[in-house]
Length: 445
Image 1 (cartoon, rainbow, N blue to C red):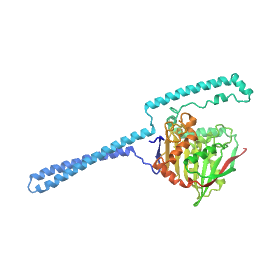
Image 2 (image 1 turned 135 degrees about the horizontal axis):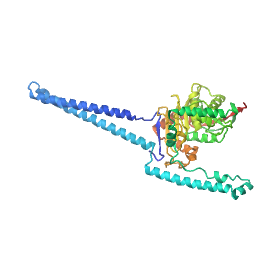
Image 3 (image 1 turned 90 degrees about the vertical axis):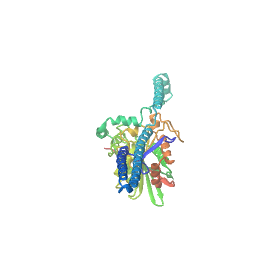
Image 4 (image 1 turned 180 degrees about the horizontal axis):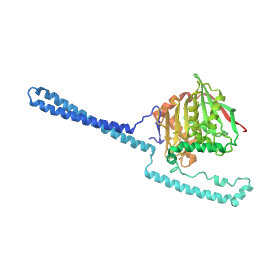
């Protein structure tokens, strides 16, 4: 564990130790050691018997040496069995430490700090409400200001000691095998509630700018921050001209509409549909933007997204794999454990252990060669460029923090992340680039 308090699992450079296999190998070696030891004993007895008779006496020395050599091999097998048993225990301990990483005293201290911070926040909010409905609020109205600023200005409470990825995963896991059915039922209900919304038809160009293409994963996160500020379900496509031809980076926004009247496709219904891998207006807007951009079938494509945008990136990469040469996906703070990806798509998943959103699907990302997951506990991280302590939900899920996690990848966190960055180097080499934005058009029903 580094001062960044970050680690990875999965990916082409990763090492997977299956504890069941280690235990099985330990048992096999132990049984083999016993059988070889028994053979050594039999050889020793044969050596003694041979020494008693003149016609077999010349063989006694050879039998004795074989018995000693066999006994030595039995000891080696026992030592190897013990070493494997110790390795299995050490791996389990290391895995628990990496996943959990907090002593109980640290947990108690964090919980106490968050409790005090939340109580303090509640007092500030109560005071803000009192002022907003009192003379101070009336004075703000007279001055043309919104008295609710006295309340909303208090920010959000510190809760990451008990509201985080692990607690969210544990809570949603309680739904059990009905998770997909429940999510699809809610998605259908929201779709029905949104029946009066306008629907988008095609994507149109809303603007473009030229600059330098990304030089690392942190630059991808910076573009997602810029994209979210555009609003309206805007999708951006960056085209890089290289000696090998054009490459495209598609940026997908996170959730922007939490209601049922706004036609923005980046809405709550898209969250519920995407978490199980189903199609949504948000995914269709990405497909429409890629079509409008004129991406050729043989031109490499990378799709990146934060939160809902990360789920949409995976869903779109899977749905469009036969139409486009989608080679890479980057997600930040997205629940993607239930989603599948073609083996031809190399995925990099960034997760903050204090962010509850990646745990909302009740399933960790699969540990497979073409998907590497980077976990970082930014509340404990002490590495360079740490932007926050990830105590509030806004800090834990925010893009500024995920930019810091991305920088740990750019610095070469692990063999898996280095392999992923190496494979995506064609998208991250810098140089002239052009970014075009697409905003879904709507048509009345």
